[in-house]
Image (cartoon, rainbow over all chains, first blue to last red; front, side, top):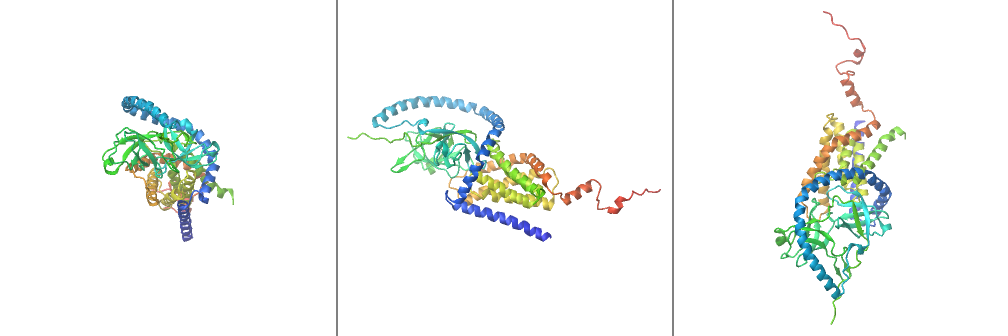
Length: 294
Length: 201
C-alpha cells in the first residue's frame, strides 16, 4: 500500500516535469505561428476581459500603494531635480537656437521633419497586466488590432520610448519593454558628433541601459540625451521613428574608451507607468533629405 | 465523481486563477524597496504545506503554466520551478509535519529564493545576449525579504480557502486527541472508559 502511494507520487511528479520540459523545448524552438503560440494567444484572448475587469477593480489598491511609494520617492528627488532644472534651462536656450537653425536647413533640403508624436497616429492604452519577474519585462495593454495596433509598433510612455508591441491580439497587445533581455535598438547620443550605437538592457537593473558599439573616441558626456535613430538604408528601415527620447547618459567612465559602452538611465519610469501611447504609423513624416542637385 | 471529491480541485483552480489575476493586475505594479512582491510561489508553497506533495506539485504546474500563458513567456519555465516548490513543501508536511507557526515564513523565503535563482539559471541556459547587472542578486535578495514578510498572511488566506475541502488527516486528529487528553499512548483505551481509582492512604 505504502509503496503504491510512493510510486504514484513519483509518477505524477515525473509526468509534470516531463510535460514542462516538452512545453519548454517546443516553445523555445518554435516560431510565432506554431500551435503553442496560437494556443497562448487564444488563452489570453479568453482571459482578456477578466484581466481588464481585475485591473479596474484593483486599481484603487494599486493607486493607494503607489501614492505612498511616489511620495517617498519624490521627497528624495527634490534636490537632484532642482539642479537638473538649472542645467536644462541652459540646454533649452542652446536647443532653441539649434531648432531654428535646423528648420531653416530642413527647408533648404526639403526634409519632411515634422516628427512630433501626433504624426505617428498614437493610440492611448491602459496597462492591464505587468510581469513581476526580473527576467521578463513585458506589460499587457488594452488596445489591439481592432484599434490599428500591429506587431512591431513602437510604444511611448512618460514622454519617452518604453518598448515595442510584440504580440497584437484583437483587443489586447503585449508590449516588450526596452529593459527586457531580448530587446536592442539603434540609438543616438545628442552630442556634437551624433554618435550612434546599440542600446541593450542591463538585466536585473530596471533603471539602467547600456549603449554599446560607440566609437571609442566619441565625445559623450553625462546627462546628454539619447534618442532613437530612425535610420533607413535602402529597403531596411528602423522600427522606431527618429528623435524619440529614450534616456540620458548616466555614466561614461572607462567603459567608453575600453569597450565603446556608456550607461544610460531611461527617461520613463518603467516600473510605474499606467498609460502608454502606441505609435500605429511609425514611419509617417520621416522622409529623408533630398539634397538639391546641380 | 462526487461533489466532495471535486471540492479540493475546484478550490485550487479558483485559487490559482485569482492569485495570478491579483498578482499581475495589482501586486506586480506596486514597488516595495525597488522590487515587487510575488505571491505566486507563496501560494504554491502554502498549498503544498497544507495539502501534500501531489496537490502541491499539480498546483505548482498549474500556476506556472497560467503565468507563462497570460504573460506570453516561454511555456514550461515557471511550471518547472513551481512544481519543485509545491512538491517539496508537500514532502516537508508529509515527512516532518511541522507545527511551528513560523514554518510558512521560512518556506516562503526558500520558495522565493529558489524561484529567483532557478529562473536566473534557466535564462542563462536558454541564452542571454544582454549584459547582466550585479543588481540582479540584490533584487532577488530584496524580493526574498518582501515575500518573507508576506508569507504568513498569504498562508493564512490559503488555509482559509483550502482547509474546509481537505480530508481529515488521521495523524493530525491523533495529535489533537493527545493534546486534549484523549488517546494517550500511556493509557489503554479501555482504561480511559473506567472511573479513575481513588488512592487509599
